[in-house]
Image (tube, rainbow, N blue to C red; front, side, top):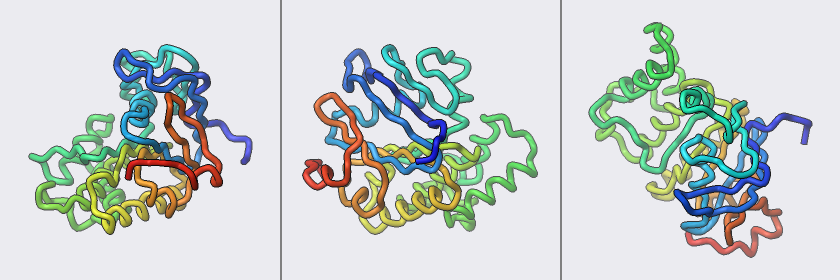
Length: 237
């Protein structure tokens, strides 16, 4: 690997879920252009890592950095600026159901400091085209299928041209064919734009089909696995 600065880095970090430590001594480096899976059974701390990366969970031991911010020292007022450098995609889409697709995207742009109507409209058109949803701008979320809603969520994550997309079980509520389309979209963004992807999943079929680095959470640890070790990995699918 080239000598590059990690976008996300943990050294000896304890990961918390509320008051409980769920992972001890996490070492992890995510570089520009990486596609990294965080996998493991339910309750092994996968989502807690994601919440720590976006500064939703506090980091109290070890070192952690994300998109130029020190996660041990980050101030409350700086957390929105950290998150502007990331795109976050959730399993349940988290769209505003009383607003159109366009209004959902406008809401995010305005909340992150955009004020030129012309530039906002141009950016919305760009991200909708990127996810193949350019004809859906005036639809309400309930008029879209689950796969289409997730594509809109991915479009939303692209609005501020993030260094990394954090995807927490983005295919968890989708059938296999729709999930496959979402994975092709994410891997395409990673390959064509060089955007790093960090994806939580418990679906072995996904990370076997779409190659990337694999971090496995088990027994209060999370470590990168070599390809030979993944053959024997036990997961709940």
